[in-house]
Length: 133
Image 1 (cartoon, helix red, strand yellow):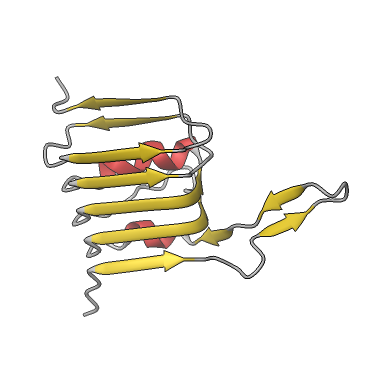
Image 2 (image 1 turned 60 degrees about the vertical axis):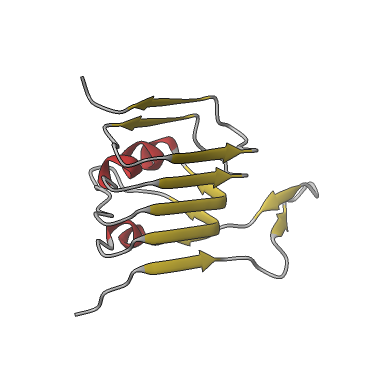
């Protein structure tokens, strides 16, 4: 049986940018396989410089995740919305310099005690409720 507790994935490239036909700089992202979000045994997950997508109808199953760090991650609204219900034991969430999502809803996550968010491009608001009532 494979039991993975900590996973740090940072996909920085020597040249982190592509240039389009008009010479404008665009970020290059590694597409994170959705199966990473189903690794039930992960307790700490650090992701950097990647694109996180989740197929429609898929569920996140990070049952033992306690700490999540996202830095320079492109994650869409669908993926971020489905991320936290699949992480019932999360205590620490740090999200910085990310893009692609507008809001975060954290409902019924009674263990969360540290939320840090900074320099997220498309982000507008966070809704935290300790119970679903």
